[in-house]
Image (cartoon, rainbow, N blue to C red; front, top):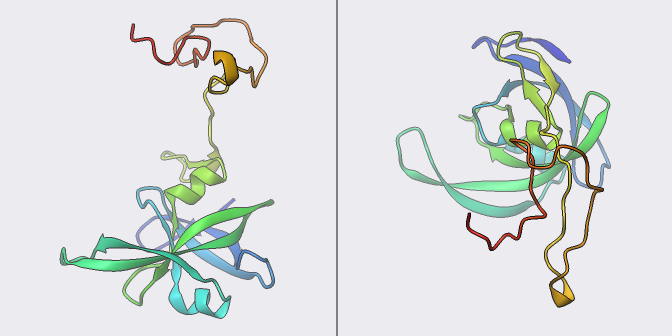
Length: 164
């Protein structure tokens, strides 16, 4: 899935991006930066695709000064998977990149040894229950499995209000 490496040694992947309606996709090759929280795309590309700004947050520029960060939503294809992610409207001094949030939304992770994207390893979940409903009853979401209480498993049958 990884195409090559950029000048900084970051793996580069091929993606396709569009507005949320999927009216027009544009193919890009971008570096993957799992240490960057957000995917950043050039502002002119997002404006051309008619991606609206949905929120503005405060970030900090390289000099440490507060800056307004504009965020929108896009439809994105990575490999054979299509989904949605948040994207930062990048200015001229911000390099375009695929960030950690997008990787996690696609259940992908970067193998630090090979530099390849791999499926994210999910922790095994044996049983989940919904919040208590009327009468305090919990509703099972997944059937109970073997090995309840093993380390790393969610023990949803334990009341969330209990402390030890």
